Image (cartoon, rainbow, N blue to C red; front, side, top):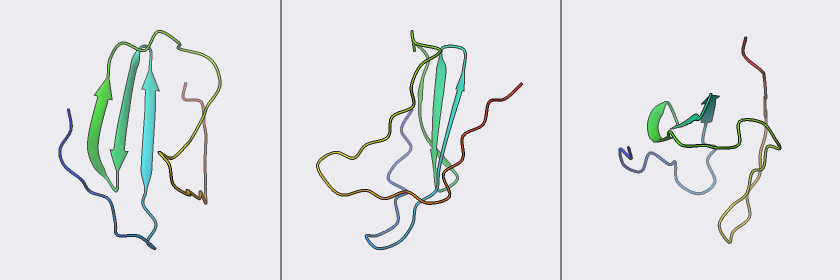
Length: 67
């Protein structure tokens, strides 16, 4: 499910929330659900963040395991 582009303009910070439960990964951008992938076959592993061909910066990055 993609509900449109809710990105802020260049020079402004965006807020991302990524939640993984079992084989389901859900992404929210600036509080709006952007996508959901229900067939993740790698429930454990490394966390990787990248940009598609441009500079990207992160601040206040938090990772927590939910019970």
